[in-house]
Image 1: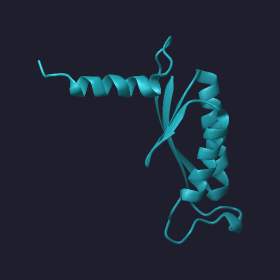
Image 2 (image 1 turned 90 degrees about the vertical axis):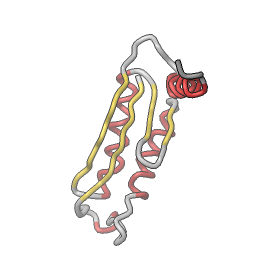
Image 3 (image 1 turned 120 degrees about the horizontal axis):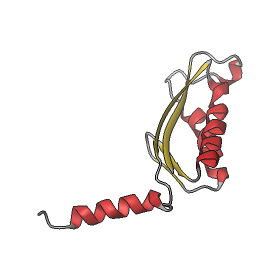
Image 4 (image 1 turned 45 degrees about the horizontal axis):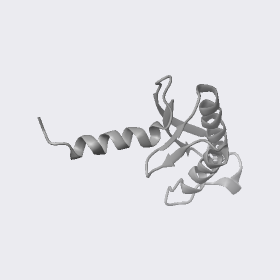
Length: 110
């Protein structure tokens, strides 16, 4: 499966040291989540809006949970947006789906 997720804190954190900057940037909090994803060893890709991670159900959702927990100290709430592509029997789809798209874009129209 592939899961695309975005996680961000909001609200005032209990620990004043973890307070978000005045400009509202959540980059430090998101960096903590991405560190969890990278340390997982699962195939992943991060863009400006989402992180995609590929693997089996339990291992992917364990990483999403730990990434969400890593953001929690930065606010009193955490927002998690998640989309999953569950396709049993397929692996390497982070790149495979894009490869098929690029071939389709390059193919002549019918």
